[in-house]
Image 1: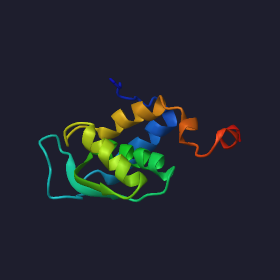
Image 2: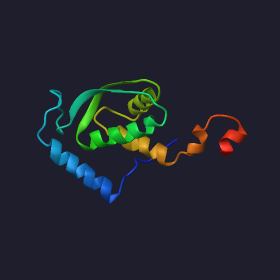
Image 3: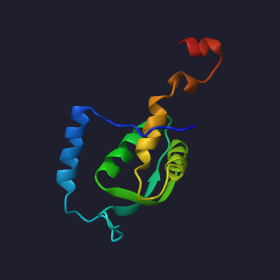
Image 4: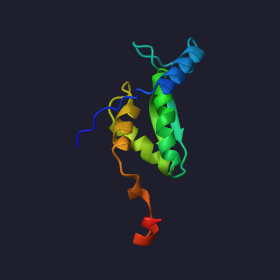
Length: 121
């Protein structure tokens, strides 16, 4: 299955990301930096069901700020995100755009547990 990279064209989101970039410009988070100026850190994500989807947005913001991830780990939903990020490509690539492309095309009704009556609710 080929998944296109997702693009966020929302002006408010882009404005917030620009503000984030400006706030952290020049800050050092890691002594591991690539030729493009990306700083590399380790990332461990917690679990929490739908929090896993919010974590994708959090990772997206970090990647847009120039942070990349050397090692990934997590619990429950966080481990699913870590696995998807590892599958998304090389460490210097933005993993969250690929994951957002998957989520944007996902029917969230598939996440509902229970029998047919529970799914109707």
